[in-house]
Length: 131
Image (cartoon, rainbow, N blue to C red):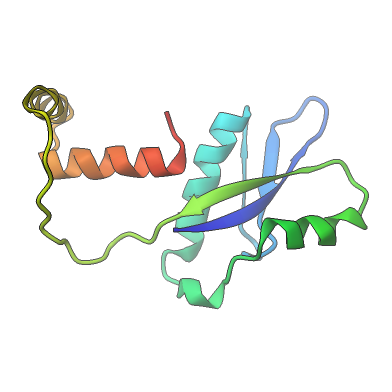
């Protein structure tokens, strides 16, 4: 999993904004930091959707922080996870408590998802820190 470093800005009376020095032209916004993170994840996915992610290597947060120190503007950095999806499906064998599996199946059914789709969605949310 790659983490792209976003530069977060917040002006008085405005939403939070985020831009990515390693992804030119990729930006997003959100009313609070939780919404900002969710929207930033989506912005990166859309930006890299038809791109080769290898063409956009993610730099270390410390390197970006050092390059921003000279600017002197008020900002913070946020690490946003990126996992390329759309690869081939792979069958796996996992062990899960029977009661937990029943709860997963019931939740998947309520959302009209297969067990696999539900588990992938839950894993993506967990990896992205969306709770």
